[in-house]
Length: 258
Image (cartoon, rainbow, N blue to C red; front, side, top):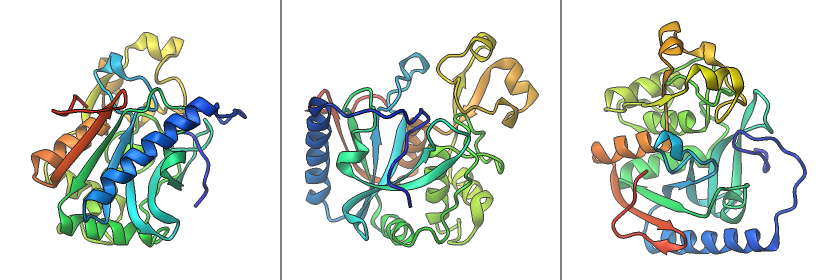
């Protein structure tokens, strides 16, 4: 799998400043230390790559972090847009790279899953690209369950769905999403007014509005898979055993909003 990419942005040549690299390294060390404290083969780790505060959201991106992956002790496995194009790919990255991708800040959240599900997920992700459930046609607001498009959070949800006993290890994308839906997943609703579509804005790049129904486009309320909807679903259904979060470099107790 490639090692470079951007979460829905362009790939103009940019040098990471020493300060930003040091901040990413500190976050990586903090997250790795927390991961080492628990005897778990895998966790979900969320980051803030885009400011979604106007949509009431905090975290914009989430990936799996796998222990003892062929690429390293703690390796992030996630889907990223290919440099602002209509394509995506799956990436393996160390934690420093994961937290140095032009992020809004260094806030982070770890979500640990029940041991059986975490083990199934870790085994599947170590074996990629076999059964990768990847659709390379990228849409930032991909409709949940869409066969034509996928984005980063949709891929995570489908991998989670495939790890359920009812999902089946080789169920394909459609079966994986339906398994998560049957298990209680409910997508978020993101409002994108018509003026945003015409004039551009938060969702102006890599977007296929036609992936959604005419009724959705007229209302402007788009169902999407968000980090919030994934974590709330997992927590609600009892798949989560623990969470930990840092805001502005400080451990949050209790956890903040998603």
